[in-house]
Amino acid sequence: MKTDNKTNSHVYWNPYFGGFLLGIIIIFTFYLTGRGLGASGAMKSSVVAIVDEVAPTHAENNAYYSKFISEEDTPMNTWLVFEALGVLIGAFISGGLAGRIRWRVQHSPKITSKRRLVFALGGGIMFGLGAQIARGCTSGAALSGMAVLSTGGFITMLAIFGSAYAFAYFFRKNWI
Amino acid sequence: MGPLIPNGIISMEWDSIIAIFIGICFGFVLESSGFSSSRKLAGVFYGYDFAVLKVFFTAAAVSVIGIYYMDYLGYLDVSQLYVHPTYLWGAIVGGIIMGVGFVAGGFCPGTSLCAVAIGKLDAWIYVLGIMVGVFIFSELYSFFEPIYDGDFLGNITLMDSFNWNPYWIIFGFSIIAVVAFAVSDMVRKRVKKIFY
Amino acid sequence: MVKKTVAKVLSFRYKILALILVLLAGGLVVLPKYQKQKGIKSEQLLSNAISPERYISTDQLADKIINQDPSFILIDVRDEDSYNNYSLPNALNIPLQNLLDQDFEGYLNQNQFDVIFYSNDNFYADQAWVLCDRLGYKNLRVLNGGINKWFTTIINPTEPTETMSTEEYKLYSTRKAASMFFGVMYPDQMTAEDSNLNVPVPKKVITVKKKKKRAAEGGC
Image 1 (cartoon, chains in turn blue, green, brown):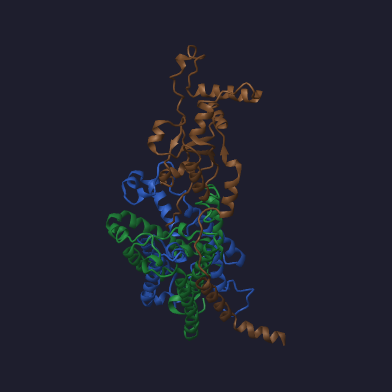
Image 2 (tube, rainbow over the protein chains, first blue to last red):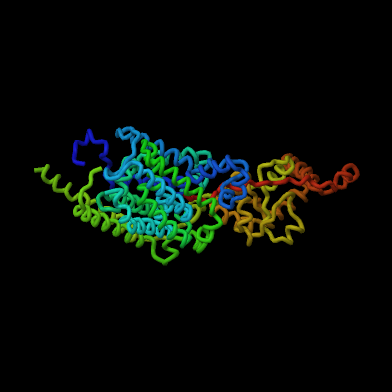
């Protein structure tokens, strides 16, 4: 980490600076739209759209999909999908400026890429499931919820970080 | 008087454009803070990098202070903002499952999108996993419904739950944040350095 | 020397930042609280109230109704009995005690139409005007003189005496014509217009588009 800043593409912003800017963005989001940020909502919309495309009657009959399907509009036309597109663009710009864009699997040197990918898939499934049960992920429920002092936001935040610390021991080989 | 779009000051047509713009800023800041790196994110659970905690708490403190100042000065009406609804057991159970997913996969949905944008294959798999998770949830919705819809307490805030003064909550929250920063720095000094 | 002090300050920079954060948060606690005022300021209300613009005369109103001007809504703020007894064509009855009901907000709080309040005289209509103006609603008017003046000027205009000017005569004849429009019979017109008299004025349907006030939504 202490190598030359110009050659090391893994030098990131000061976390306090990043946090400050993120806070300003959240304020702006609330000021403009009255709602917070989110991320997993876009993935939910994608799943609903795919299922609706592949098996429309099944989507119609399922109590959960049918909440997000309307006759005249596709499930993709929501605020969160556009916001997620913006996240992709913004991250691409930032990564491009810092020279971090390239295809690779990032993992600890002690494990293989395959193991990393398997755990990523498993973690993703768990997170997708949990985010639906809690109606939001770290950005939607915890971060935006905390900005308006929502009780649910604080509970979700404590539950996420509490259980992550509790289970961190079992996954230590993956990271350190 | 904000919020601008729900009050009709900016027309609804701008909604999607503003969404993309806010998303760009959000993605840029997340990526620049290093949230596209799963090993950096996971560091918070093993004590070798506290970027997540610092960014997360700074953002929450800054935003809540800013929102309440804007409310005080009359630019923003806090009562009109969307408050995340509280489903007690849904939040706890969902949070616990998300916590396991977080430490296993090393991302949360927002950060995984950032990593997708810069070509991390593990993030692509992770996003695929999230979509599979959503799919499983939807298919087994009748099984999850009691948790999903149970114990609905309304769109409540801490003020409603504990009858605290919001300003004292914010003050307490920022003290907690500062203490957490100090503790995290102390912990980091004791933990073995890990380069990634 | 300066460099040294700068370096000294910089070594404390996180402590300073933390202090700023806590101070800002503490500022919220310390700041004096005040009751937030909803709607427009008192000074603005006063200047609106003394402006003659907020009145519409009975002649203007009669003219608007006869020409089927679509740009206004009539609001009768009297009680329901008086409204059923007699009211202006196409008026909407919102008794004063129901003025702030949710159902009527769509009619009052919009930018599409002029809202014209009236009661028997100015009194209740003025109160309705003040209440709505205070809430920041736009395009509010009061019918000057209310129904009473409507009767004395439009429905039953006083015939000018011989000494009056030609303008008075002109006004009288327009008022007389207007009153015929509203169904008053004059002996000299009786035979000719008999068949038309009972034809009601076509009911104008007012559809007020509710002002877009979407509740903020979220969800991840």
